[in-house]
Amino acid sequence: MDLQHSALGGFTHQIETSVDIQATPQQVWQVLTDFAGYAQWNPFMVSIDGKAKVGSRLQVRLQLDANRQMPISPKILELDAPYRLLWQGRFLLPGTFTARHIFEITPLDEGRCNLSQREEFIGLLVPFFRRSLGQTTKDGLEAMNQALATEVQQRFKEGEG
Image (cartoon, rainbow, N blue to C red; front, side, top):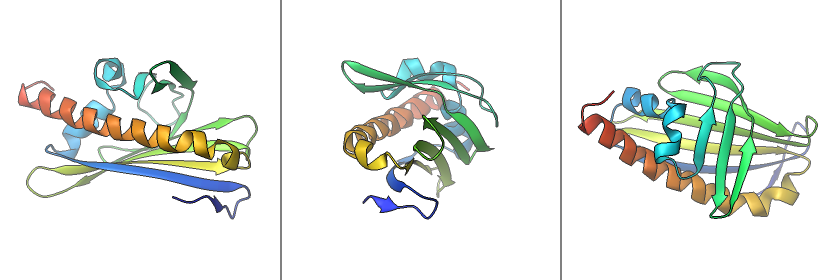
């Protein structure tokens, strides 16, 4: 999506990915909020420490490429199980660079659902980081979507959970 000027001041940039999963929203939610298990299946968010509850501060480690990881410490702002999880982190001062990550799970027909991940970048520094964040973030989210779909299907096919 193109860079836009925010009504709140600064700039915004958004990245969105989605995947259909042959599972119920509750099954996807169970894997999505099992943060301790991320290291075993997630190629992008390789670890998350913290609790899935509003107000909780998470310690997330992103794998940007084969040689680079980035730690972030977002705070969970919304949690509506099993449909929506939103966390937000910021760099430096408010209004400088804020990232909001939104997971949305939408029921579909025949025991399927859609998982959408959206990353919203807001702030004065967005134009300077946009290029480096854009494709790396999108590729990471898409890889995570596919890995999540596989993990959900394996866990529930094998009768776990």
